[in-house]
View 1 (cartoon, rainbow, N blue to C red):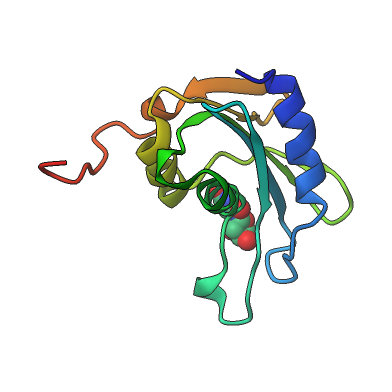
View 2 (view 1 turned 90 degrees about the vertical axis):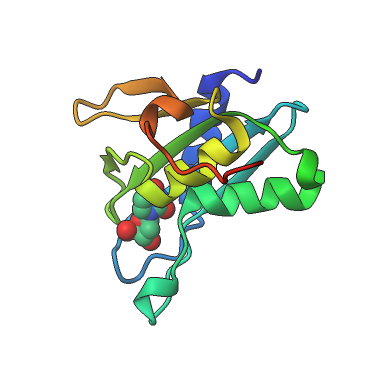
Length: 136
Ligand code: THU
């Protein structure tokens, strides 16, 4: 698995690409796949507010595009910033948690806490009692 610090650095870089003129919250995600590759994503908002997308799911979409249905998530880092560059604690939203467990309930997820430290948790622990498609 890639070093989580490497993913944290790449997530910070990805956040610089965010298109977030409405929330002014710039989010970046960097993930590693079980195959050993790294993919990144940022949030992309829209004037039609509900159709904006999160950084985590952007990174997952890029990974699936590259690796296909065999993609498995090994680890993901999420970083967020205000427009003045201040780092902010952002934990993956509910929809992103559901997307993360689809590809790796055992994946490591790291994001900042309010005190500025990085927490590391398993994706599955972020979403107990999650929906799983029956008979799959
Ligand atoms: N956002 C993410 O990119 N990831 C999350 O897990 C939480 C929220 C983005 C979506 C939106 O552009 C902005 O943060 C405010 O909700």
